[in-house]
Length: 411
Image (cartoon, rainbow, N blue to C red; front, side, top):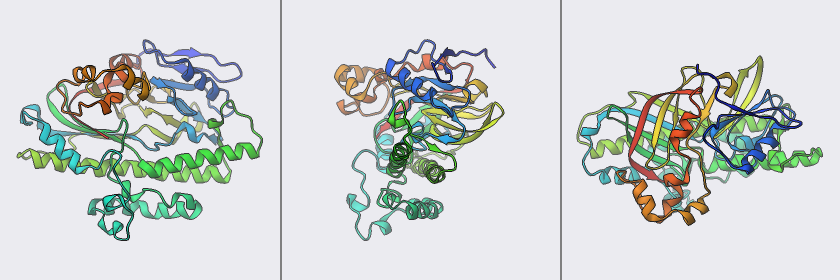
């Protein structure tokens, strides 16, 4: 393992903050959030901060928070189980068509994306909507159905969500599907999504329940969004069950989409090829029971990937930037974690104000993707430089493959 590359921020009345951000500065508001988290009485050892860190709601994106005896729902967030899946194919760059617009169009037809996704056919929850769902969605929902039934028995507010109807769909914002080339010219498929509407509802619901518990018990917090659920309480057990279900939904959602993308590739490339030569499917917004420094702890990673020694992970860059398949180095001080991407350097509103369409076109040259003003908030300049992010975490991961996007589908 490399020598430790972190900086230490001491917190009055709290645990230290270890920050892998050398060469990648982050905003004062995010620092304040981290200090707030570090003052909570159940943090184990310290808070670890990844180089893509930036301001989040309640808890900072790019933070790793180990706890004993409590969990903070906002330290997972509302995009529960969001993560990346990548598969290597047997295709090479030379076997792709010169014009990649057909591949992009086929992927966009195969995977519902954007804001127009409804609850049933035509966006309406009509009587026949359930029966109109594709066979792959119905099959994928089967192992999730009983768990969802238990959740809705306990929490009826979760019942009327886009649950099965969002399975196999991409979503919006920074979610994407990409066709990439590695350093040897091999073709990869990579996609980014999570638990969609139902995960958002679960996260939001339990954050509010935690706030209500804090008020009832008259517990004062530096930030109301850091409301927590003590272990042994009813809501703690319910949250752990619900978040576990949402994480499984997210994993299956990525698998359904990946199968559809591969099928779309087969429809556009008249060659025999195999997939899943190498495959990775990892969360970066989730909670996990782990053992660190002699204690069994709950680790919440919000915008961070687990990087145990030898474990493969994915760190994507922004549109037009490079992405990386990495292998964890098992760094104990990061609680075996690494960044989940480049991390935003400006808000979506700022990006749309400050970045021109011409700048976006130049930044995404050579990538078959949307070139309109509605995706400027996802252009590379809205994110931290991925090379600096990778340099800051040399002691957390080693690079196995470097990927370059050639097709990008945005939500």
